[in-house]
Amino acid sequence: MKKKTIALAGNPNVGKSTVFNSLTGLKQHTGNWPGKTVTGAQGEFTYKDTEFLLVDLPGTYSLAATSMDEAVARDYICSGKADITLVVADGTCLERNLNLVLQVLSITKNVILCVNLLDEAKKKRITVDLDQLSDILNIPVIGMAARSKKGLDQLLEALWRFEPRPLEQETMNRDPVSQKEEDRTFCSEDQDHEDHLQEARSIYAQCVTEETGEPHAFDRKLDQIVTSRKFGFPIMLLLLGLVFWITIAGANYPSQWLTMFFAWLETQIREFFGFLSVPAVAESLVMDGIYKTLTWVISVMLPPMAIFFPLFTLLEDFGYLPRVAFNLDHAFKKCCAHGKQALTICMGFGCNACGVTGCRIIESPRERLIAILTNSFVPCNGRFPTLIAIITMFFVASFSFGSGAAACLLLTLVILLGIVMTLLVSKLLSHTILKGMPSSFILELPPYRCPKIGSVILRSILDRTLFVLGRAVVIAAPAGLLIWLLANITWNGSSILSHCTDFCDPFGRLLGIDGVIVMAFILGFPANEIVVPIMLMTYMAQGSLTDYDSLAQLQAILLDHGWTWQTALATMILCLFHFPCGTTCLTIKKETGSWKWTAAAFLLPTFVGILLCLILNGLWTLFT
Image (cartoon, rainbow, N blue to C red; front, side):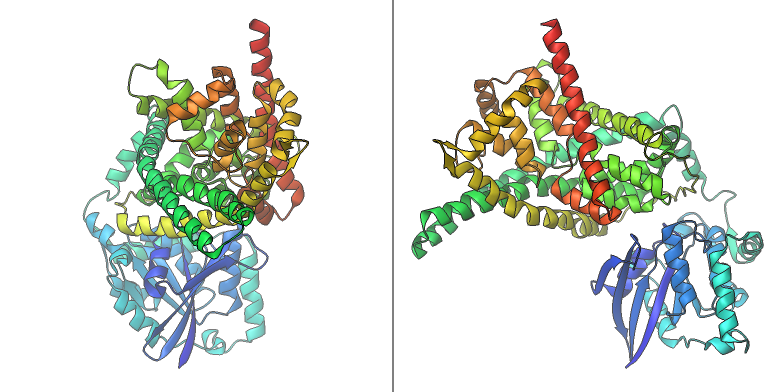
């Protein structure tokens, strides 16, 4: 069995990942490149008598290495580890993509060009002469529509038939050592590629026919609306509110179904424990501690993520998210931060851990660190249930229109407060411990495309939802054990949890809340979803996490224990601005490699939340 290694290269937004998935299926694994915080994927597949290892390089516009992504792609291509470099290009904007193709060809002739998105090109009345393009470049050129797998058989055949040329023949018998040195020099300098750009224009003119004068006219017209100063921000807020409304409305029923299922499963497990004569203490520890914590996190966290992440990915596939970064770029530039931070904020709405990981797209180390430190200023889906419940119980009643719309409106305003605070803290960091000027960056506004809904849902659930849920479950299990121990071990006639809440009470009163709420946030560090159950468990002096049947029942319990709208407002502020959850903190440590910056990310939002609560409570005391 022969073996070949393929490097998969290309610009961002050309369907490179779709080509990768089409070739490898599920036989793939991901991980960071050595010494880098850039994720790489490798996959294996077999065709006829050959085993292929496909290495998916980060998307890059150039080999000049102005970012970590470009450095990884450049170094791997220059290393000579790949037998074939498969470059994926976008058939709707081939001229821009040819610049990278020509740069790769200046290093190695073992190249196959895959012109993808020919179905989109056909819709825009763009025709690519693949044979002529192959003759000019002197390499195999395969046309594809990767989402529908058209052209996949031809690509597999081309990869199988291609015989890599030895280095000596490729460089026309020049000394391999000196040739490799030239390759490193080419790849390490920020060179002017004007010659490549001019050659790309010439090749494009010979091989591409545009039946209409402007094939991207629709995209330009739509961009005049969604990126305009007049309509850009209102459309962005409207879509944000719509996504939240769909998430809020859609997550209720699945959460109830999961809760009912886990309640039924709990009964079965307890009966099984009874059959085995498991001691009562051990049963309570497992079921009331670990089981209830895990099932609460899953039933509350899974449905919103399973709705939010696909919606987010649909907007991403449609091509709208880069427009969000474009709209917010000016605001972040004023704060000496990076416009791409807007994209990491959007990812943080689903999960702050994902948002922190997404900061890898920011090239500048200083601006990447600012984005990481401030990502938790926007609420993740784990905080949404608490915010929504408080808004509905204490603030929505004064609205005359539908409670769902009112809750969505108030939640959007709360999130806007988080975004504003993100900008303010980013500016503060940029003028103090992380001084510097904002870096320039190239932001491609990809063509608008109709998302492939089925693959989007599958990809978002597998790559994001289950990944984040898995991390949360790993942390929630030991947290459930700790909470059970605190609630069930007594000292001087009271549980340790009661002693802790009494100790925290004076500090809580300064913030306009009580010790129970303070302790609930502290114990909710592993997962934000368990904050409200811990409050109920403590208020009702029960030894396990407590659920509630309705918001009316929850409101009655809170009112009986002294809650007012001021308490609700302070709790909302702390829910919005407090330390990241355990999963996010571990991710921050992994991304920064520093406990110092992890501690800074922990303390920054906590300090802001405490300060705002102190100010509001002071004003309330002053005027009442």
